[in-house]
Length: 149
Image (cartoon, rainbow, N blue to C red; front, side, top):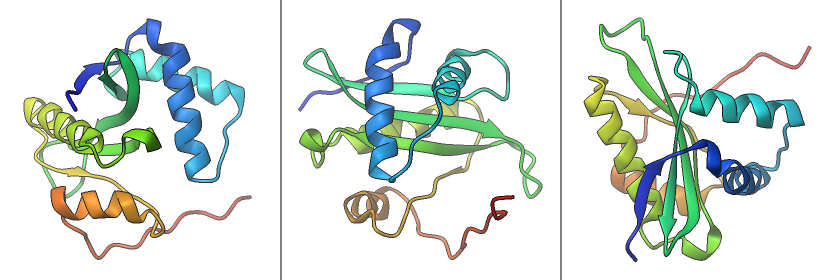
């Protein structure tokens, strides 16, 4: 299936929101309305700390998204790239959409001089992990976070 990967634009707000809502539902979470607005604004922003967003489009229909950002790292001189969100509609999974999005993030990282791209997923994301095992390297790190106050 031919896929076009392109940057998000202001005109993508409705389709982006649909895809990101589905992504959040997959991970059994929701976010407040204010987060939808701030996230989309940051995806379109031009501050160095802002995210970048990509859409995967097939036959004129957006079917996937990726959000990524560059940040400093204490163990490197160069920035690193964090692929925060990656999603493909269930009806197009297994057709190369996720791989195309990841490869586009890899290309953006290369263009920015960021040799490292990393991401997290949940252990139950079996279909995603099959792809990740082909395009990435599983690390031994375990994530911890602060408990809710």
